[in-house]
Image 1 (cartoon, rainbow, N blue to C red):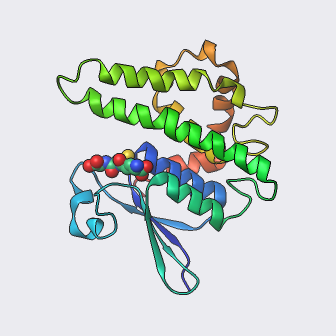
Image 2 (cartoon, helix red, strand yellow):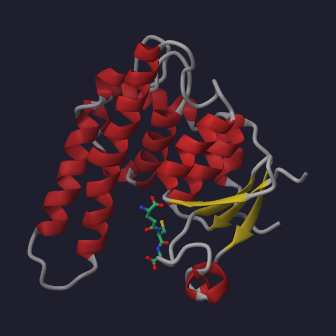
Length: 209
Ligand SMILES: N[C@@H](CCC(=O)N[C@@H](CS)C(=O)NCC(=O)O)C(=O)O
């Protein structure tokens, strides 16, 4: 059985998170490019997989022959963590796992979500300072996260994991806007994790071959 995972997507933060997670988990995958600029995400073949017309989407073969189609980048990351136990989330110790999930969800809901909404509002005329407020909320959450980098040098706990991936794609996208002097531990973490082989490969996943 061909158990390769198809990753439908393009060069966006949500898609990079999935590509980096696949690389970190050591799972085989094949990229199917979906060009947003030319509207490929609205074509019937993509809408059949993701009726919301968004990316990323994965199509995974299951051992019993069925296929699993999943959208929502963060649900995909959790699925990949289940597919490759011990790579993206701690196994065994429920306390370690709970803390790793707490940090992952912190970056997903308190940092990435307001930033995405701020980005959207910023492109809509006459919405007052809504975009600014949301972007500031996201930045404040980042400034409050410096302590999360522990002695291991990672945010997720003893190992690089989902929270590190969520934080990295986000911080890279706003690197120039951050006052790094307020987050010295995150700065050291940032310079180290961005050079990981799997991270570099993930960021190249959607390059033309
Ligand atoms: N919550 C979804 C968001 C997906 C999403 O908004 N994807 C963007 C690219 S990052 C997209 O497909 N935009 C095209 C559009 O909205 O038309 C996720 O995390 O996967």
